[in-house]
Image 1 (cartoon, rainbow, N blue to C red):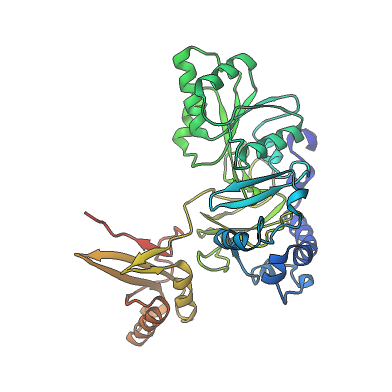
Image 2: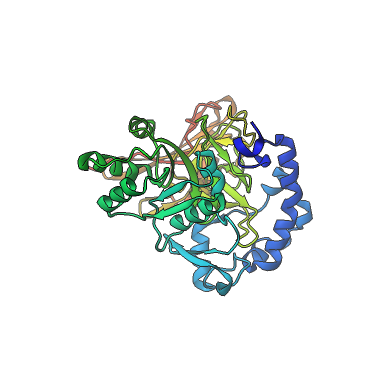
Length: 415
C-alpha cells in the first residue's frame, strides 16, 4: 500500500537515525527563535549558544520548565508569560487550562498536530467526527476540530454533557467515529442501548483525557467500537498516539520527548519510569524542555505497524510527589539534590510513614557494597540541610528499588 494511504505522511516511516539527524539539525534554529522572540526563553536560556544544541546530550543540559512556572510568569507578564512568540491579537483563540494557564492557538493548519493521531485511529477524508470534547475554556474541542478539518472530515461539535441529545445526534447523523474521553463514550453507548437508539455507525474512536485501561477498551470493543488512545496536553498538543498495533504510544513527529528522573532534568535509562519532558517545534509556542508532570517509560524497538519513531508506555502516574512532613514540604527536587551530593548513590527513594502520631522519613538508597556508617551519617546530614528534617538511612543493592518512577513514597495511613 502506498505511504499516503497507510500512513499519515512519509515522516512516520523514516529511518530512526534520519529522524534524529533531522530533528537535531532543526533544533538549534528553534532554540534561537525562542531566545529571540519569546522573552521567557531569552531569560531561561541566557548564555546558551543555540548552535551547540545538536544532540540529546546537549539538550539534556538545558533547564527544565514546569507548569507551575508558567502560572507565576503569566501573572507577571500576561497573557502567555513571555513563552509565546505571538501577541494576543495574533492568536485565533486563547484557551485556559487548570492553573490557570493560558494557551494560544494560531491560524496555523492543524495547530495542535492531532491529525496524525486521528489518522492512526482510522479517520479519513469525508468522515463525520462526533467530537465530545469541551468547546469552552479548554482547547480540547478545538484540537479535534482543527485536526479533523485538516484531514478533510466534517465535525459534529457535541461537547460535554447532554447525553440524550448526543445519542439522538449519533442516531440521526450516523457519524463514522467518536473523539472524546473513553468513559463518556461508554456512557453514550450505554444510554443508547437503554433508549433503543442505533449507534452502530460508530466503528472507531480516538480517546484521550483520562486513563484507558484494557477493561474499558474491551467494553467499547464489545459494542463494536475500536478505540485508540492519544496523549495530548493543552500546552504541547499531541505528544504520542496509539496505532492499530496497540503496543505503546508512538511519539509524534513534531516533538522531542525525554524521560527524566522526577525533580531533575536528568534522563533515565531506557525502560526506567520517569517524568515526560517535551521540546516542541511549534514556532508560535516554542516550549523547550517542558515538564508535563506525567510519568512514563521508553519502550525498546519500533512498532509492528511500521511507524519507526520511539514509543512510550503511556500514562503511568504523576511525577509531582510533593508531600508535607512535620509541617514542612518535601519535594522530588530536594531528594534529587541529596542524591547529587553523594556520588555513591545510584538511585534513591524517600519513604514517608507514620508511627503513632509521628511522621518518619526513611531514605532508601542504592549503593555498591552495602554502604558504611560514615556514608549513612553524611547522607543523613544532607537530608537535614536540604529538607530541614531528620531521616533514617537504609542501604539497598543496585537495581533493587522498584522501577515505578517514585522518588517520594508517602505510605502514611490515617485512621
